[in-house]
Length: 153
Image (cartoon, rainbow, N blue to C red; front, side, top):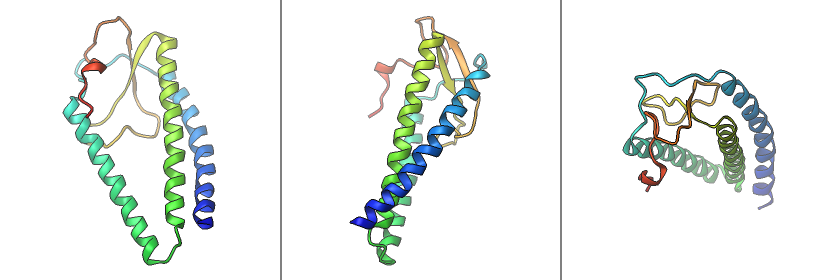
């Protein structure tokens, strides 16, 4: 149990520091160069979004299972579980913080911000990427879907 706790902290702290600093810099870079959405861009459908999220979850889940099996066979004593938990918690906290920063940027600019997700990508790129800005007119634009009608189940 002690080894698990130590490995948890050993990964959590650096993850929070490195990813937390990178998020702020990436947000500044992305928001400095926003542009209008291209005319050919479309919002991904709810089915495509659900499929993309399921593929990502499957990859992450099988990766974690493989690491935990490796830990068991090498008699790691729960170290791998602590490493995984520390990494996932750190990334989750940073992701939550980044989502709040995006929402604050939308409120400050009174516009909608969109990040390009390539058709076969599991998630948006972690590096600086294209950000599209659309004025918040109160009506839905070509890249938007009403949140209350999304099938996220």
